[in-house]
Image (tube, rainbow, N blue to C red):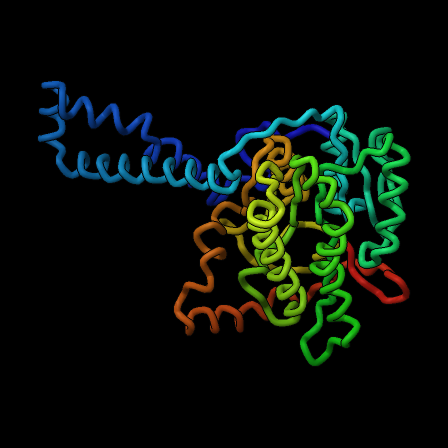
Length: 362
């Protein structure tokens, strides 16, 4: 499984490409600050600045914004990493992925395997691909504490007593029904898989990570955590709960467990072309194109292997739009949610049987 190295992203030319160009040019202090220095300390530069005052004013604003952007990014990274660094030996780490039999989880597993990293996949559905030697599949209902405990013991026996140090909470389901059409089991199962299982997995696998003060917990949430739509209310609510889990865990690792080196990553991806969301019509186009599965998986793998905490928002344009959806005026939020009824009209996500109850797995 190779990583993408093309000039354009897998989704082709869209808003993120333009945004990247602006960030690396107009908002790049390495380019704008020398221009300001020349304008102030070089005779020819001073003359040009006087002749093109409006352009020079734009450069000054761009330089200030660029410096603020870099400073904000540095402060954010230092904060979420608690001001401490850590190193990873990827020949010794074990990555645990829930929902890794298909979809995003499958590609995450294959990408780690391409780096010769040991991977354990937990899923209720069988593998949809031939697992490389470094990938081990274990059938497991992640909503069951006893099943997770049994699997944990198997992992340790197979690895000389070692527990996974990287936990990727990727499994997710969606029923695609309105509030009145959904059953109590629909709602409870969605929350059990998409949110409550995070707590069960944490209770089972986090203690060894905390004790070692080393490891990473990745929560695959969704952009739906910020903006829900008709016929996917329980899914959006469960993803909002997953986002809150990530935020709370990040704080508790420092304030309660005294494990500041443990990394946490949350993923808020837009519509991704998995079988979970077949028929989904986001209609994002230029500003929010449907994401290729490999795009999301690669972003997660790269972030994990960087050894740092953070947030992955895809497409990047969502950072300013969807992430701040709730800060919009109420009338705009309400009309937008009503309009989103279109996105689930043709939805026919893949159904998987989970303990006698149909579910949809990523």
